[in-house]
Length: 126
Image (cartoon, rainbow, N blue to C red; front, side, top):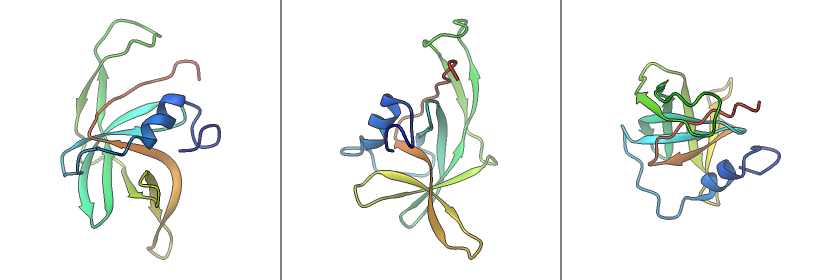
């Protein structure tokens, strides 16, 4: 993810580039979807060759910290949630893809992905 055009978060920018030494993706593994400043917990529900199919988890906030940076969540896998597709680019970073009207997988550039860690964060400043 490019800082300033694809993400407004330095943390999300760095997470999107932390691919060296990441675990081998497997069905059921937790992931973090990296957005503009938020992060969403997800699960790998399918692997199609070199494409990961991910659904966003259901999250429940379990702390009492209000609008703060200190946030704790409980996660539940949602197999019927919206599916997102991720494929590695030539630099080894996960890039979101979508299917076009001809059924071809094309770059969507919506979210980045961090494999092997399930995390959620809501930025209250937006």
